[in-house]
Amino acid sequence: MKNKLVILITLLLVLYALFHCRSMAINMIAFHPDNKDTISNNNLPQGMKEIFITTEDGIKLQCYHLPNHNSKQIVIFFHGNAGNISHRIDDLVKFRNIDKIQNIKCPVLVIHGTEDQVVPYEKGVEIYNKLQTKKKMVTVTDAGHNNISSDFSREYWKPIAGFIANGI
Image 1 (cartoon, helix red, strand yellow):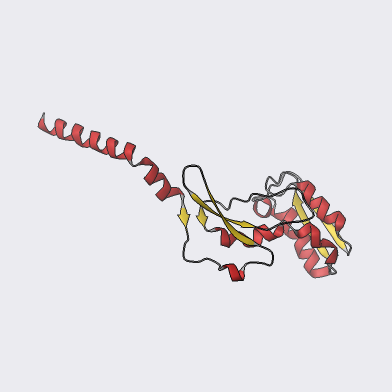
Image 2: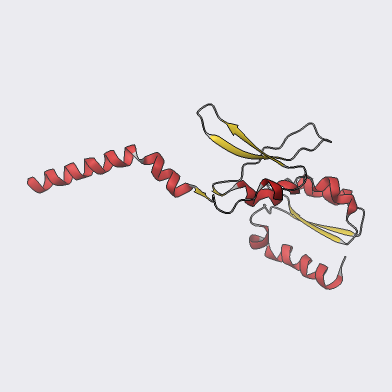
């Protein structure tokens, strides 16, 4: 009887601890911030500014603002659960590719999946249509953003090999 009571008390204490420490445990498992490998404001791309937003509950969010004066829209980019936003600056700058596409002079191969949920297929077509150079577009039916090179490897890698070997 004494052993059962000890087991029951231990189980209750474990459940109590798990219940009251669940948010801390979730944060430890799910989030992996990097506060060491950051970029100073002096090294940000031209025009980009670091800003901080304080939420109603007092949480301070670090943000980068990269204005596009040709647009009335604003992109809010959440970098995910690991690292820090400075690791994603290249991703932020890519949003402006459409403004620079006409400056490209070399041949371009665009490969895009029709089911891409990160960069819509229509954006790939828009980029392709704005190119003013030798170009080729490969549409991979049913491919998404993260599975195009693995699940559709033949449709993805064969055009790349051909492009490298022969150009457009």
